[in-house]
Amino acid sequence: MAKIQEKYEVLYIVDPRKTEEETAAIIEKFKTLIEENATIDEVEDWGKRHLAYEIDYQTEGYYELVKFTAGPEFPAELKRILSITEGILRYIVVKTEG
Image 1 (tube, one colour):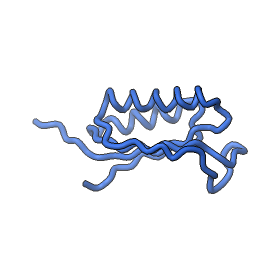
Image 2 (cartoon, one colour):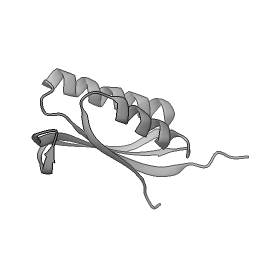
Image 3 (cartoon, one colour):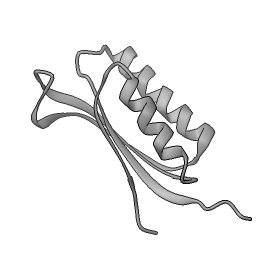
Image 4 (cartoon, helix red, strand yellow):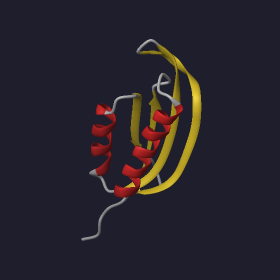
């Protein structure tokens, strides 16, 4: 039986209190994790932006958007790892059309 592959997007916000090196390390960690378990379609580095509302007393965050194709089990594991990673303010993983 063929593996079903779906398209997903993950958008995560890195804590702005992290240094440039720490931010780059977090981004590289997730890029590598996604590459090992899925196929990356596109990476968009949105940079530092103002948040719509304060999160942990922060008004800014470093945004990273990754579009990828993976099996249905990987997004749950990605969410788990994002939720326990220090330096991630917020994240969202969604399945996209097409």
